[in-house]
Image (cartoon, rainbow, N blue to C red; front, side, top):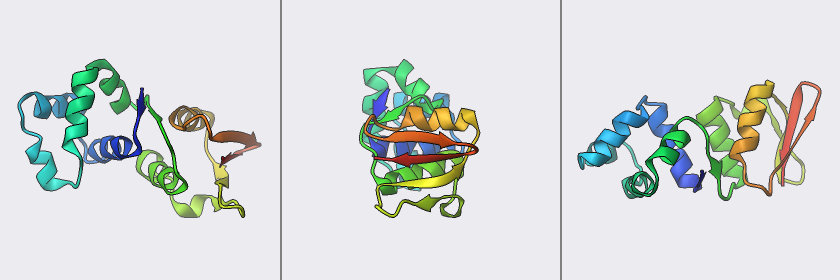
Length: 134
């Protein structure tokens, strides 16, 4: 499922606080999203639309199976932190400012990152480290 950067942020924020897909679905179906909006600065309308368009795909997105339509450099850094608990001190920015390198991740995390990134991003492995760039 391809989602926007803000939708990815919203999903990761809710997963980290920790809400399950079923709980979010319940809030949406029972018109209780205001309970979330009062606690978090999120776009609840996009959650409602995602669920109505395709609940199965939204459930997959909550499981981490999503691609972000357009990933910015700051967006990438934020998603690495939110989704994978990868902090800024675990990689270096490329001198050109178009990516990052020296990121040590296992092959499973690498595949999850590859799946999350839009097609304009490249991922290269060199030994234990990966480089992400556009």
